[in-house]
Image (cartoon, rainbow, N blue to C red):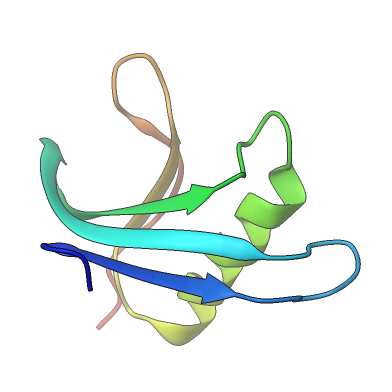
Length: 84
């Protein structure tokens, strides 16, 4: 925990993925989303498989509403609605 940021690492996920560094923090910059998750060293344009891996992991293990790949108007291009 670093201030209000929770940081953690996935080490050697596989030969293809390597390591992932992740920060989770409260965020009110996007309407409807209260948490920001940054996956470092990973962008949709450069490493889409790494981003998709983490998004799929959250889909499998949470009921959260999820958004990813925000456009220039801060709308998610990939979205999963809240599950009860």
